[in-house]
Image 1 (tube, each protein chain N blue to C red):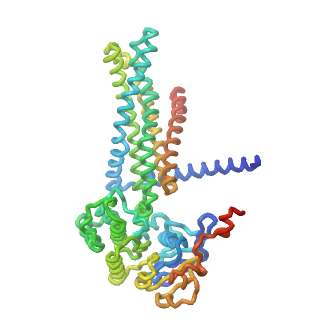
Image 2 (tube, one colour):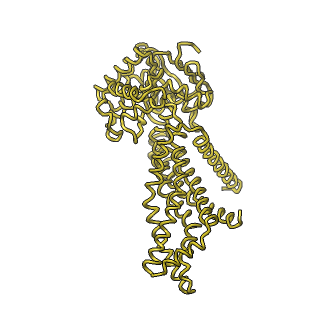
Image 3 (spheres, rainbow over the protein chains, first blue to last red):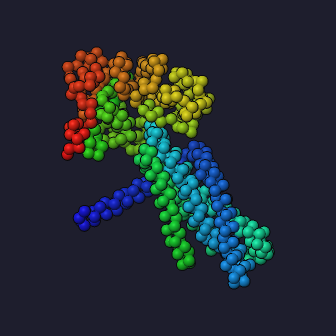
Length: 262
Length: 267
């Protein structure tokens, strides 16, 4: 391949990427910037919150608990060397509220709910269910994409809060009940060190941003997939890979912005 | 456009990638008629149905439904027009998360002026017409292929559309079901004045049922007319297709290089 061909291929790939982003933007615009029919949309939204959010609870609770427990064990071993083991509560709470909560919940959400959204929408496309809606004068963007998008957007911040709570309870179990740290200093040090605005609110803001992008990627990949078994499989993989990369990349950007005191 | 035409296609050209599916196609479907679309596999009959319903946009040319130019309508206008259309998909396209009853009720529930009681009555009447009133509580995964097809048919006619597009309606049906579907199509055509367009490979049934037939091959209409006239058509392509002959001007094989040299691995 000549160098000029490589440059041309690079340009074509860039244009293709921009085209896809524009297409994804149009799908999102069609789904969320139209006046919803509340009588139809509300039951669908509640149903999707159940599927996307509530059914993700077991993995979020279990993962949160174990991550809190591991964090407490590792943290205690290091803090104990500096005779600062009573700082275990703040260490766990700050790690979870600022970083681990939003990021790990986002990654788990992309793997559990995002992939399922993509596969479901992709299969609806492959079996002409979306086309049949169009033929019945029902807009699939509003009836299929919009409730799933909003469900993901609302669910992820709530799941993040639940994840963080269970991580702290897990750390409490290891630190206080097992290792034997003082319960009062565990909670009071945590209360004294964690700032609601800087730590909790910023963590929730991160999860809102992650929820937006993860669900957008998931519904778009399903809607735009090649309607074959292989196409759906590739779209599902892309959802998990793109969502994970976007979460990690945006986490850095948001953290930098938040530390810069924006 | 003539006032008697339900669908009119004007010099339509449609390509998929490099491949030209339709080349300057012109066609008129009379109102209240049953029209058969026939032709070898892969000639684009399903694509033509999708062009008629505005699911696909042609590269050039126009498609009219009544007085509306389907190819020039906005999304909202297209949805208004589609309320007068029904389509039986080749894949049935039933909603897998809804029961048989809810599938048939789906388009009716989009009409805010219909009460639940009326919707229930309409659904039961449509299911009765296809012989599946007793299967109303089953899920699509519980149905056989033939039953799913009949549920899809009940859903397609639920709104009593002016135009109904049938994509392979007889596939997977036993002879009793085929007879019932034919009877139902004729009844809808006569009593409600519905226009029906049928894509089918079942030559005998389509010749018996349709008022008018188009035979499509190589992106063009190679034969058209009333069934009785078409049977006596002198065109070799039409003859070969209607008689199902393996040799003739319509190739059975997709274009490829010479067979023996291909087997020998020669370039």
